Each structure stands twice: as C-alpha cells, then as structure tokens.
Image (tube, helix red, strand yellow):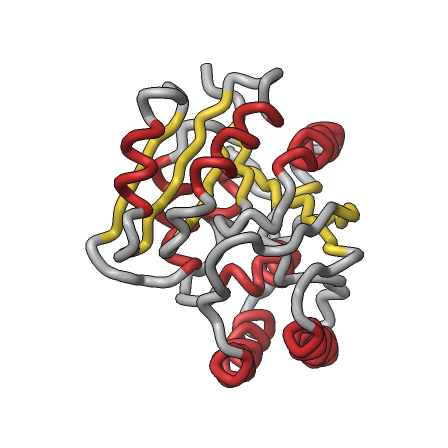
Length: 239
C-alpha cells in the first residue's frame, strides 16, 4: 500500500530531474512511496529523461501535459492521479531539499487529521537573487495584509497535506501560491516548519517578477472574495 505520494510539477528541467528523483528516493526510503513527476509541456527533453529513469526507479510515475498549463495544473494533475492519502509537493528545480520531506510528513501525521490539514515549509535562508527575494517579500506582505492568512512563505513549493483536504479546495490557475489561505478557509490548521533552500544549479526560473506581481495582485483579491463567500466548516451528523 502506498503511504505517500510525492508530486513534482516540472517544465524544462531536463538537467535537474534525474538528480532530484534520486534524492527523493533516498529521502523516502522508509516509506512505500510513489513519485509522480508531471511534465508540463517541456520542450527540452525533460520527459525523455524521466522515461529513461523509470527503469532505475520503479516507484516513478511520469505524467505529461501536451502543452504548458502552469504549475497549479501540474500539481492538480499529480494529486488527482495519486493513490496515497498523504501528498508531498516540491518544486522541480532542485531548490527544495527532499531531505526535509520526512520531517514534514511526520509533523502532519502527528496532528489531529480532523484539524491539521497542511504542513508548509518556510525557506528561512533563501538562495535566490536579491531582486527575487525582494519581490517575494513584498508579495508576502501584501498577501498577508489582504488575506490575513499569517503565512510566512506561501511561495515555498515544499508542502505536505492530506489529499482529501486539497480536493476540497476551489481550483483555479495559480492557486498553488494561495494553498495556505485556502486550507485555512476550509477550517483546517496549517503548521509551518523551517526547511532548507538551495541555489538553482541548472536552468532558470519560469516566472518574471513583473508577471508574477501582476497575476498575484489579481488572484489575491480573488481569494479574498472566496474567503468572504464561505460560511465556514460545519459538523455533519448522519441521522
């Protein structure tokens, strides 16, 4: 029985996916884990690298979009295909450290399943360019001001959550940046844990600061609307 499903959305990460997948295998050696890479319309041979890797890693599953649909859709595709109740997500650029996965999974399992819906990583020492760190800090402050979600680092891709919790959330493109606020909206608790952050060794970010800011501004107000239109969780009794 699969105990955890690791979902990794990737786009043009041919030089990163092999080492990342091997690191995930080592980090989850104590689990019956499945590793789901979702290739989001790559054009650099990412899918080919992953297909070859399946011979080495039997637990590896490779799903492929025929065109680029975005990170949130990649996460959703992976979660829908997952067979475990516990889902781990991390970015495909290698900056999230798979060695942190066991700590986050243990934290989720130690909590009340009816209360704790997600454990989210906090990149305490960002290994990004200064302009990207500044843009991220401004976006975080703005989001906290509007959404009141108290999320320290909503952009960290390393998160662990229950599959049923994710499937209860309203889906929209770019929702991966607002998972903490959306999980809180459903009445669950979110715990944050400091995690390692590594420099990108190959390739470059798929997001520009201006595009990220523009989309994030619109989406933040959309999530605020969702918060205002939700009456909260209710205890359900079958009669």
